[in-house]
Length: 70
Image (cartoon, rainbow, N blue to C red):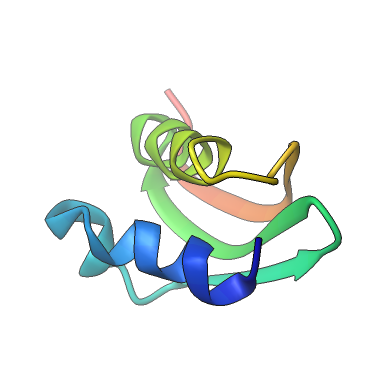
């Protein structure tokens, strides 16, 4: 798996492709998300995308801030 394939997976979802406040990095099989999202539902959707990419076994969201967590 490469960072390009994870980024491509995000680009395939029109709703996620327009989010410019999230940055994606990869360390081995861990995908790291960093930035800000509007709500928890958006974060949940962002987490589901890399899990669908072959080779991604973990998604780290510790660097993501949720503006409206409820």
